[in-house]
Length: 445
Image (cartoon, rainbow, N blue to C red; front, side, top):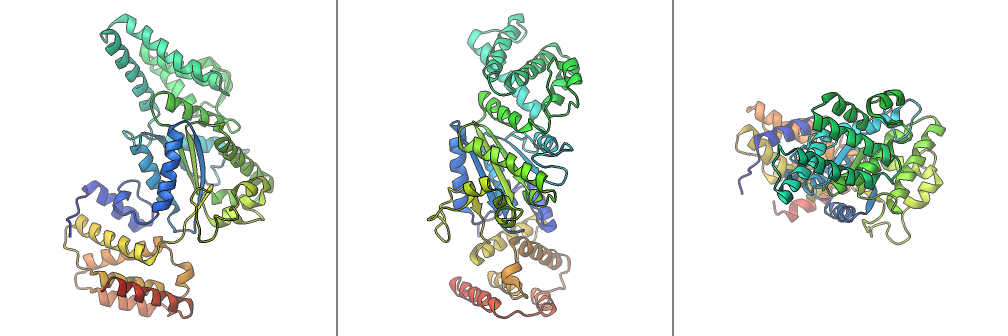
C-alpha cells in the first residue's frame, strides 16, 4: 500500500472535524469519494463564469448526505482556479431579505468569509485591494522604469485605478462603489489609516447611516438590506477586472428560508432568490456563481418550499426527459443521492488510514472488518431510510478512537456490543444486507 503523505495540520483538521460531525475546511481532497459528475458539472460552470458568464445552482439532499461537503470541496477547487469565494450559512438572523437587517447580516457574513487562494480562511478584502494596487505599481514600474520612490508613480497608479472604477460607474450603485475604492486608494497613498478604515467598513456593510457615509467618504448611500445583492454583482465585476476569474458565493442551510413562519417574509426571500436566478440565467450578472445548499423539502414542498412560489417552481422543476435515473447534471438543481456502499467502503478505508497516520500507529482494521461495520450500520432498524454518510463517519471515527485509546478492546467485541444494543430490522434492511453480501463477494474478501 502506498504510504500516505498528509501534513499533520491537515490530518488534525480532518480528524477533529469528522469526529464532531462537521465538514472540514481543508484536506477534503484526501477523503473525497463519489460526486464526480456533480463536481465536473460545477467545474464547467466555473469555465463559463471565468469567461464572463454566471451560474446558479441549488444543491439538495437529505441531512448528512454530503451537501455541505460538496459546497466546501467546490469552494476549495474555485480558490485553486483563482476565483474569489465567499460563504455563509443562513439562519434566523441571516436571510436574503428581512425587516431587521437579516439580508445585510448575510452580506456581512459573506464579506467576513471573503477568501482567495492566498487567504483561504476569510478576511481577504483588504488583501485583495492591496494586491490590486501593488500589481498596478509593479506593471507601471516595469513599463516605465520608474523607481518606487518616484513622485510620478502615484499619479500613474491613480490613473489606472480610476480607469477600473470608471468602468464600474455605469452599473447600478457603481458610482458610489467606485468612489469608495478611490477613497481607499487615497488613504493608502497618504498613509491615512482612518480613511482606509472608513472605506473598508463601508465595503463590508458596517457603516450604519448615510450621514456617517457622507461625512467620512463623501457618498450618500450605504449597503443595506435592500441593495446588498446589487453590491455582490459589483464585487463579481470588480474581482474580474483586477485579475481574478470571478466571484463564487456559497450559501448553505437554505432550509432556514423554508422555516420562516411569516408567509409574506418567506415569499419576499423567495422573490429575492428568483431575482438572483434570473440575473444569472439572463446575463444580468457577470463573473458570478451562486451555489445554495438545502434539503429536498426546502425546494419541493408545495406549501412552504420554493415550489410554493410558482415563478420559481416553473424554472426549477425537472424537465420531461432529464429526470428519474437519466440525470443530466445541467439542471439548476443538483440532487445528491446517498453514497453507494462501494463509495462508503472507499471512504472508510481512507479514514482508517488517515487516523493511523495522525496517531502514528499501524492500521489494523481489514477491509472485511470495514464491511462488517457497514453491515452492522445498515442492519439497524430503519437504517435504509435513516442512515446517512455523516452518521456512518461519526460512528466509524468513534470506533477508531475507542480502539486506539483502549488497546484491550477488540473490533469484534465493540461491534458485537453495538449490534446487540440495536434492534435488528427486517424487510428493506434484508435487501441492504444482501447488497452488502454482494459487495463482500465483489471485493473478494
